[in-house]
Length: 363
Ligand SMILES: C[C@H](N)C(=O)N[C@@H](CCC(=O)O)C(=O)O
Ligand SMILES: [Mg+2]
Image (cartoon, rainbow, N blue to C red; front, side, top):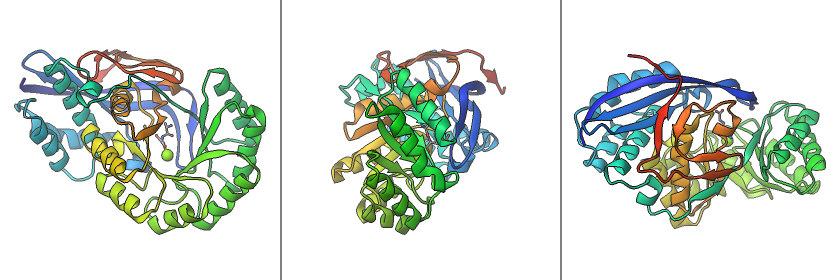
């Protein structure tokens, strides 16, 4: 199976409601799509979101990395030369993890099609269903409590609550949500780097004193402050999950070895795709550190790829793959089935994506 052509396209999918975090507000998913065509007629699909505030990847940068570096590296090559092929995607340019992720997942899609097996099975997975949380955007405590009730009524049993905009309100936010929903859902929180280390410990311990029953806190402090992250981890009763502090497998190993966090959030867009995501999961597994499989504001092509990884590694015990259910429509044909919190992995060969409606090709 030889790679003959790589096409780049764009999709635009409005969100059901604005997505708001301490870092940004998003109203629609505006992602780059990659299609890798082969001489057998098989097509592999990938997707990359421009999450500039986290990955540094803009739409222009993703397209530039694809055109100027990655596509040149893979064109004409045999998909069966898989390890060398995926390795050269990672090595042909530094950073640019979202563009690499789109191409890496499209190659896994093709490799699964070549051997007529779904990717999660190719990876040794036996689980075929997972359950995701859903994000509650940061707003006033009253609005967040209303959004939490709406999420419960949609069937979610774990809510990922965004905090960190005017941190003085954060304990009140969680208190309003817990009062509104009682014990009907687990609450995990994500500060998206907004707190100072001491402030984080104070807020988390107040939440503990008020018995708000917080499952975990995601990225309490700024990404580069590993000492600050460790300070919070050592002093907080709430387990700390490193998100923006961990991009690569090496980052994950350093965080785990230094004890700077209790848990790791793996995202294909931070690490560069399925290949490095597996390395993080396996390193974490050796050290007995549980992982979350998360996503950015992504549609179903790339979140579907993450579902295959989550079904293949049991060290991934927490799922934050709510991109598709935050969208108001689904232009992707095939792939895993997203029925609110319940996700059933695609059993078609490869990743199972069959096509994309409303795609605008750049060529
Ligand atoms: C969408 C997911 N639930 C999520 O919150 N992901 C990120 C932020 C993604 C973004 O800004 O696109 C996270 O910080 O965990
Ligand atoms: Mg996060």
